[in-house]
Length: 180
Image (tube, rainbow, N blue to C red):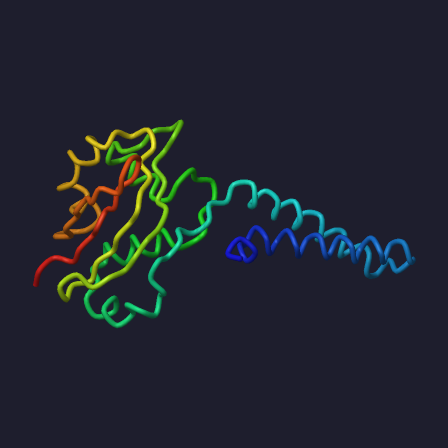
């Protein structure tokens, strides 16, 4: 359902509808309607297809957005909010969410990049926290573990990052708000 309402899908459908209306108008000798609808419909349709070919859907949320709203608004750090906003929106022209951040941290592999699978907001002892489930693919687990202390600082001052093992090929990264 989520892919149905992506910007690429909306433009593709809109462009195809305009093109069909323009083609029908042309076939029925209605030049006032056919010219603008075909003129705008085909480029919009092609633009929508271009977006669809390079889109990266938002990460699946395990926690409904409204569930932690009060805690998020009262105590989330700027780094946590940016991180959440970045992974729950449509991305275009990227292989994975947080691509530039993972490249800067040297946690990137061009051929088989890490993929963020899910995100969860939760209350960690009264503090706002995010948990990202990451399939690390070709990046060795040891490299993630070596950068555990740096991960939190990279995404925000004082932010604490903890790695939790999720079996072969996956781990959870928990970003916890610093103690007050």
